[in-house]
Image (tube, rainbow over all chains, first blue to last red):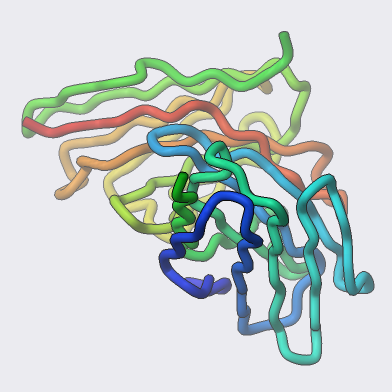
Length: 112
Length: 115
């Protein structure tokens, strides 16, 4: 069962520009996380935002959460070539034990 | 170094064979997970375990089996009953069960190809 859906599926931007990715989900959540995956590698946790939080920052990352719209966005400012990767949102809920459900991801390509 | 390891990195299997993928963690995490990832797709949960000697099926458990005899280890067997096993397999672990902090730590993955 797919909970999160990222949008867009793919995004290409020039180095130095900001990249915005969106995630929508279907049911109430406890936390929402964003992960990054470089090609052929495992996922790396970027940031977690709790359902009672609206915005969170970590370095060049800014995450927002709108529980009324069941959506989140990830903003990467001043993009770099090393940001080229796939980005996934993942949600968990109290009624899902410790399981989290991943979306299909946004493939981000930073152009030199 | 603390972390989660998977082996082998690449695995080739003939049709009809069972193969076992290894996953080990030294993070003292209670919960461990196996995911399957197909090209251009997200992760789908195969099995997960919240405690030693206990595990539950995920969304796509058919054709797979697991064991959790030790806290550190959660091997996945891909059986001959799995009709389309070629995929990238990811193992993950997370902290105390029931915690609201549910960050998962991932291994580097095993790419399985059926010949």
